[in-house]
Length: 239
Length: 82
Image (cartoon, rainbow over all chains, first blue to last red):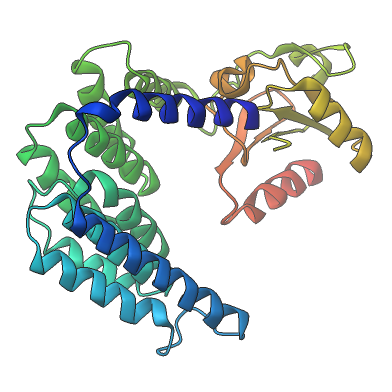
């Protein structure tokens, strides 16, 4: 897995350097955001090393989150503002300010390019605070307003997972189906198909899928071996 | 009761090393296909997913993620007590 990740990084670097000649000159605003990010990281690390805890009002992450947000407001519509939006929300999240994160969702217009970068931060805050209904209605409105296919797919995926987390499988299924309707073949479509399959076939009380496999020692193992026994099936990874 | 682990690894040797080091003595399934591991797809599972199957092979409990995973333990205990 690590190897695969390294490959992706290499590919990304290769692709980036291949595009270099057409690249516009460096964006000074983006550089400014990167500079802010560095200082924020340094201060935050120092705070934690000195025993500072998330949720403490003196956590520098709070101050920086507010600074990133005001940067966003000072430079509307720029790529740097998008980056700053992501930074602001992530740092509020980091400082356990989930209410702050949820409140900002209302201040991001549906067409804002930052949505693609921040939807997972909102999801984490919603999960932590149990604000699923609020998250869901926000994401529903995004889905309706979106004209960008990539964002629509992302939003429907979030919606599906949020409905599942709230125990509303039929609504979840509709969201996953909307992804499939955009066309097969994409990895989002594959994931959506898997979720629909789970909603239909992997519920408590339904017969478990028949299992037939080999252990890492080469021994055959199958559902037949489990007859009359209680089974705990645990999925993990060594990495 | 039977405990079976399914690993979403791609590198079987790394997994074997880990299993040996930690002395994990129960069956470990892995086909080296990573996220495309067949059983993982069959159960739409990723690392951190747990299923409990009862004595007739029905799904008795299912859980994803670390939060609230205790319910898996109590589901097993309840089935074993029956």
